Image (cartoon, rainbow, N blue to C red; front, side, top):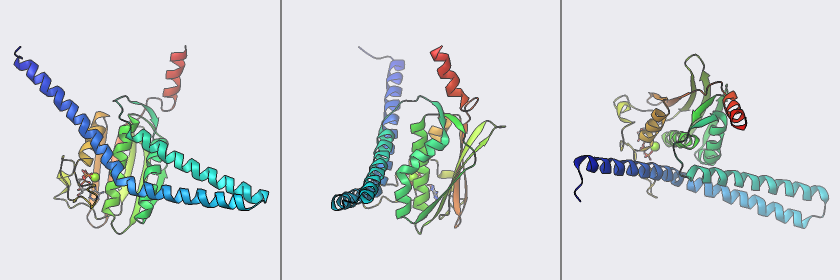
Length: 266
Ligand SMILES: Nc1ncnc2c1ncn2[C@@H]1O[C@H](COP(=O)(O)OP(=O)(O)OP(=O)(O)O)[C@@H](O)[C@H]1O
Ligand SMILES: [Mg+2]
């Protein structure tokens, strides 16, 4: 049977949509790749803590020392669980569903994954969460955006520096704002208009083949636009760069989830 032109176009459109989805997922996995070494490092440290305190607890009969050992082992185990849970939920492919979400929680979940990476690269982290906005988001996609921006910031601070994350809300405009600011190399004005283009990069892949695909910011822009949000960049060469995300505030903020569940129950 011969396909009509409309059918051929529909088929091609379907294939493009599928490939976009695959590209998004592989972009996400490449971010995991960038973090793999520092996360493995952190697990190693956690295991060292667990092993040393287990030995100490076995060696000493004293109640207080044993209690301290168990407490340290428990804390180390809980930290490891937090990282694996974060990693698993990040890697899971999920649909387009958007829900009202506390942005502080969302940012903190991302920081669990990158803290060690920042520390290894001598970057100090400053959190300024003046407000606790709630926005309607696909949490997984926004986490991917934040991870991309944080990794870009880290890569721009080869000699170390400071990463500042601000969380604010602008009720008059109806937007929550997340700003990721670095004290890195900055972006020259002639480069700035191209950074959101797919495949635009000034980086070369590292020895493990990670990074430099030039898809990070293109993905960020696509995700933010699908949230009816905005992404803005300000940069001074030699001083640093700030990316600001604006996301629509949830109606009635935290009350939103509550009233929804009450409605369902009733
Ligand atoms: N915080 C930043 N500081 C300085 N330059 C930046 C920053 N963020 C992005 N850039 C510039 O924008 C370019 C595009 O960034 P993008 O994240 O899209 O791709 P990439 O980081 O090069 O590669 P990928 O993210 O796919 O590994 C970068 O190559 C870099 O030149
Ligand atoms: Mg990038």
